[in-house]
Length: 488
Image: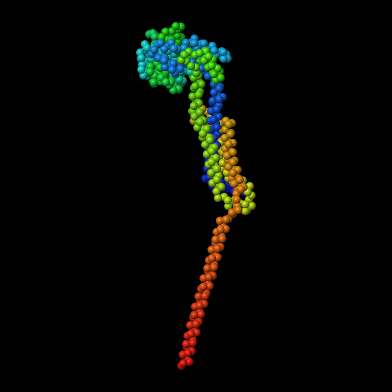
């Protein structure tokens, strides 16, 4: 009880130093717990979660090949891959063990604006006789086809999304920019023209969308032709092409559709095997295989990766900085405690009890700090990580116990240091300062006393001499008087 009382009294007496120790230990463990949660989330995202992805593979023109496909040169359609070519690669899926191959398919072709309907202009527009039209009609066969849309993902902001099982082929979704330019609303109707004939087709606005991905180069406001601007893209259901007879066995000119086929795979390992198989079959010149879904997934990890890189450095700084600051605070607490240790030993307190008291003075403020910071770090890891990693959850996991143990080890090491500081404290010079002062005082008093005695003796001798002089004078006077009387 004596030890605990003394330790508590010291902690309270030095409240600012104790508060600093509590805050430093709390901040240190909060930061390292959060950093560990971020690191664990990153490892899982790049490992277990990544391998569990079900990628969609596509075969598309390379960037160099895409530049040779001119939107105002109808001969460019000859560079498109045909549906039969895609079919050959689809057959290879069974060779790698895919029992039930599944595909996402989209078909696109230019369409002319009609009447009052106007597309958003391009930077260097050409006549529709060269381009086939000012808009691009995309037909998606299922919702998964939207995921691999080469012009980016989008979301419906008004109305409804497409009904991929629809039969009339009239429903479409248009961009918000296109709707504003033409005063279109959900339920509005408009007509598009055939790219090579005078035929027109009526469509109905089922929904209005906005893109959630950045525009690919050449398909945003920088588009050279209006039909290449993705805001002029009109997305529709599969029936639109068949109902309006836009697909034929021997298409001519711009009626030659551009196919985009996605090969659905069960795992990343299966995707890698499929890539090797397709390459062994030799791709058409200027084409490459990739996975837009894996690219999108990796893009979502960039904020997490950036945060993890920062927190890895912060974690090292917190361990080193927190440990050094706590050590300095402990060293400050041990200053000028030698006489206190000596006095405790004089009254019978053992070195071990003194060491335990000093250890408690370290543990009393730091242990609550570790508890507060550790609990706060575990509770805040997920929401804080979600905010800093743009929605990517970073929940506290079992690995977060490790930094807690490291922090506890740092505090325990400090407690051991101060314990042995008391154990090995020297007491041979106890009251040295006071002895020197006492001797000096005694010496001074002796000198003063000697001087006083000497002065007293001098005064006494002086008084004696004066008295003798007076007596001599008196005798002389008496003698003179006697002589005078005798003469008379």
